[in-house]
Amino acid sequence: DAGVIQSPRHEVTEMGQEVTLRCKPISGHNSLFWYRQTMMRGLELLIYFNNNVPIDDSGMPEDRFSAKMPNASFSTLKIQPSEPRDSAVYFCASSFIPGGYTFGSGTRLTVV
Amino acid sequence: SQQGEEDPQALSIQEGENATMNCSYKTSINNLQWYRQNSGRGLVHLILIRSNEREKHSGRLRVTLDTSKKSSSLLITASRAADTASYFCATENTGTASKLTFGTGTRLQVTL
Image (cartoon, rainbow over all chains, first blue to last red; front, side, top):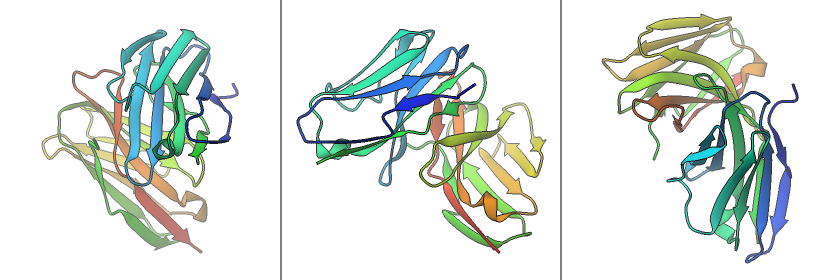
């Protein structure tokens, strides 16, 4: 298995632009998670899905953030419009609950 | 918010020595997990210990859990330079099935 695949690995965008991060979870996993990591705030859970259904989006910072999981093999996290404070590493993880998570390599987002 | 607090924040040891990291948490849990993160990479799941377990081993790793003190420890024996990484504890809190809350991490440096 190729593991959890995230794209792009790096994204540099201008303030105000729309950013879309993509994730392909491990086949057979029933849960998918989006985390954000910064030096100041550490790892923050943004949203998670169970069987493609959003279960908890209380960590989504603002309405500018949205996430979808149209099928079991694909999820997106969208930021529109982006702001410099959104700069962080965004991780996608999947799991077959109960069990440990498998993380992707992350997308490093820089908003200038 | 961070559920787990790791201690120490940073640890520097020589190759061959043992490394012990501690994690404290605040609420009742279903399980506690430890992850490793190499610089610039995603997190890697190391071990999961359930709330009714007190100790677990995996290779050079030994994890203990004391639910009465709401604390856990990760021991890495005979450390190697390749063990250099950040280590995070994460808790699945009771009532929030499948959702992990990560601690602030311990940065381990193993020198030759």
